[in-house]
Amino acid sequence: MTGYDHLHPSTVPLLELPSAERIERVRTKRWIPYASIRDPYAAMRTLLDIPRQQRPENILIEAPTNNGKSTLLERFETDHPPLHRPDQDKSLIPVLMICLPEHPTLIIVYQTILDRLGCPYAPSARRTELRRAVVTNLEKVGTRVLLVDELHNLALSGPQERDAILAFFRALGNEPALRISLVFAGTPGARITTQSDPQLLNRFDVFQLRLWRDGEAFRELLASFEALMPLRAPSYLGDDDAIARDILSRGEGVIGEFFKIVSRAAVLAIETGEERITLKTLSRIRYQSPSHRKVMIDDVPALP
Image (cartoon, rainbow, N blue to C red; front, side, top):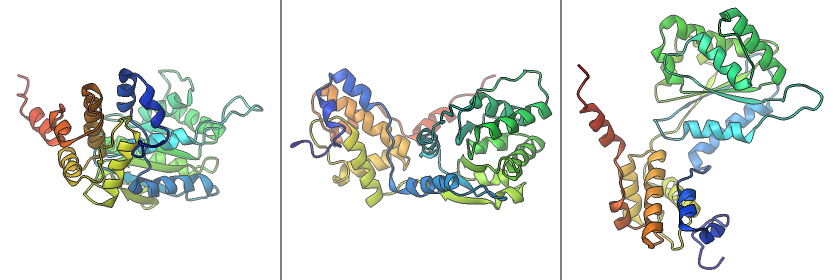
């Protein structure tokens, strides 16, 4: 549509919505297949395409907090949903995602997988019973790839629990009836938590989602953000050096922070009727950088 070349075609109709609904759309995160995330996504897709094998290929994704790893895993699971099988009582679940809680134990991992599969279990069930249920149900639903987010939380478990959890994950690939590939995701240094199991670690290809720097990829990302924000006037986020550098600096290289900055500025642009993001708009939003928030937390006195 003439006059809205700065927007993605799917965004243009949103301009007809009331301001409140446009603001709701602005605040809703959308999937953007930016350059650095395409390779790990393609590698994950390959795990589904290759035949089951004795030593399944695995992937480890490392990224700073709020820099896209969880979004990547969630998107991959969404893109490969359960498939109904009329001739069987259980759907095919090719991709399953779990998130390791703080201080995970092997029993919690078993319970988390069963919960995600929708399989009931007795609260008093023993480890061996839970493990049998996990293996049996993963085989029934034909899971090919297990996504494990927040891998770094393994560091908060004791050495015995950590080693037991890693041994179980390795066994999912070794079980002849399963041969499941793993995708681990965690903060930088997540590999350290797997070093006690070198047989498992050497089966992983590693991808790192690094902090963003100014450059073509970052400018394309800003342009993609702008294309999805239903503002009537162009902001030139990817072309305006001052605006781009301001967002990069305040967001400290983290994609989740960029979205927060841009979305809050877009909300203000709608509320004021300016309909575009400028340096003045950015200066007026309520926003604290990650390092500022950390300082504020560190300054909180300890409880007596």
